[in-house]
Length: 66
Image (tube, rainbow, N blue to C red; front, side, top):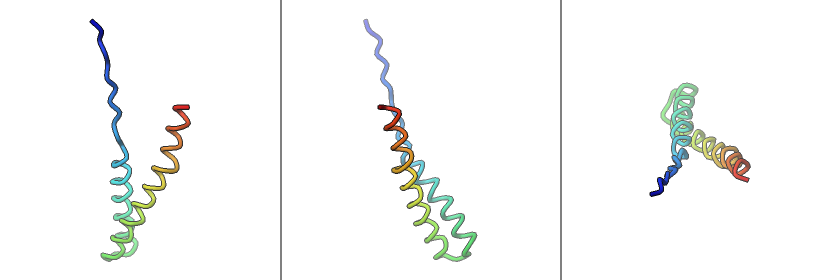
């Protein structure tokens, strides 16, 4: 009888998007104090999270696996 361990990798991509959106909304709302500031902060926060995830995190995990 063999005991097989299954490694489950947790997908953390959505966490980066949520954190980026949250801080973008907070920053945009604080700076501009309007709905459009909040909406702009949301968009900018999502773009920053997307860049961070694709450019930095993915590259680092590819280097570790090689």
